[in-house]
Length: 454
Image (cartoon, rainbow, N blue to C red; front, side, top):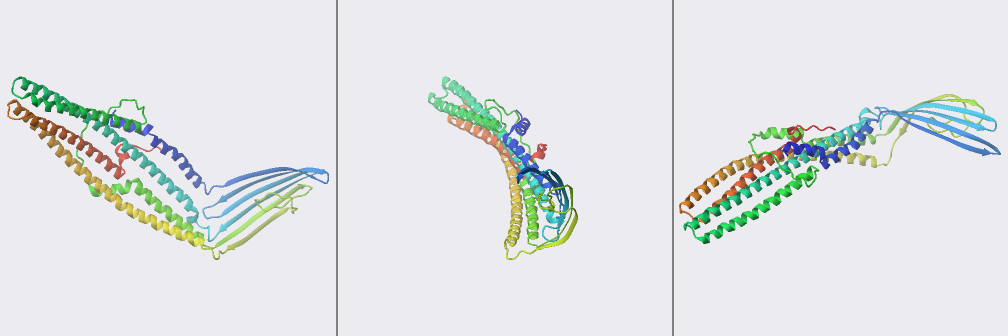
């Protein structure tokens, strides 16, 4: 399996990503509900009851639909229509009452900014939710990449262990030939046998590490744990030049946590607008028009618009009203408390944003330095591996000529194994450092050409 295939399977089957997308269903519906704030709503109520009074039975049927509408200025409009139909005692009566009423706040609850604040807060929350989804996918993809490279390193380490064991066995054959030729003491073979046993232990440990890395990757990909997954990519590290200042700028423009905090500051600012408006007096223009009609005889009602008929006698006709309503809260410190709380929350969010900005810059600079240092380690480890191989070859030639001991050869064999392991670790560390830097920049999805289908 290639790394690209592993990332693809992770995007398709990883349970963390699936759970994040499931949560998005409810989150998007929350935004939909918030954006319906200025759409009319309707309520339909109906009732029927049977009555008996003085030996006379009858029925009363009530139908009362109402429609309410909040406008961006804060005005509340309500249309209601009520019908009461009574039967009994040999007389039927129908009474219809239709009315329209409105309330336009002039201070508290009035204005475009305060009434649009809940929608803006919901939109900002939706932006935060999308950024959290991006962060979840980014973290998961990065984890899969690191797990894949961990498996690749374990496989390469297993290969190094097998080569080391093979070199020890070849050295045993060489030493045996020297003993048979009388050019080496038989006691020196003990060192070679001990080295073979040590290499066998290292081989078993490498196999265990490879198995653990397989299980870890299979778990991230939500695959059957019995699958013998093999990392097929070749291990090749290439140097990447990085501009630190440009990297910091990219991170501030793309990192989900920083962008989410900016949105949180805007949410707190909208909350302060609402809290300040709540401290104002309530001054509203109110008005309404109502019309009542009757047919037949019997008891009818004249309810206020939007209220059910109650059986109170009323007169048919049209009526209207227009007025002002004023409410002044006295001695209520909870309103001021709300403003203080909202202002404190805004200042706190702004401080968190400033702190996060510094932390983002520090993390990016540290990640860039880590990449550069890792590349230097790759170069140094490659040189060390080449020199260790040359030294071992020369020492073996000297052993053939009888100019060194078997112990020295085994020492250089061990040095070569250490150098190969260090070179492998340096390459993996450099590639992992690039992956971590991508994550710090918020560029993982762009690097892998991943689009969030939300």
